[in-house]
Length: 75
Image (tube, rainbow, N blue to C red; front, side, top):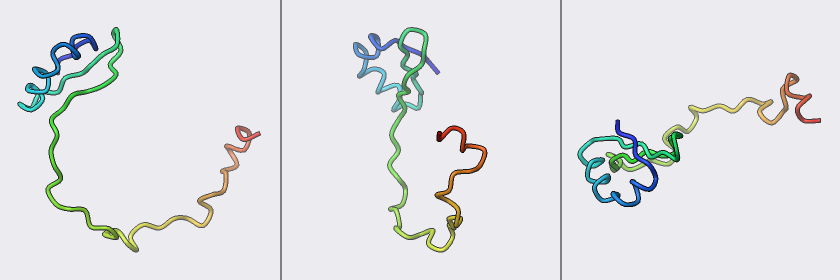
């Protein structure tokens, strides 16, 4: 995985995109800090089915209640 500066990413964007299309991951950094990654886009293989997880996900009755250990943060 190669890392480039934001300036280099701006000036070499087309080349970086071509490298990403070839399967490489390029990290973009601001100074020494990584801030973004350029990777190839892969379209979904199957269309989404709304409701596919119906009745498989359960939300607890106390979902909206604040846990006792977090009460001090809410004051």
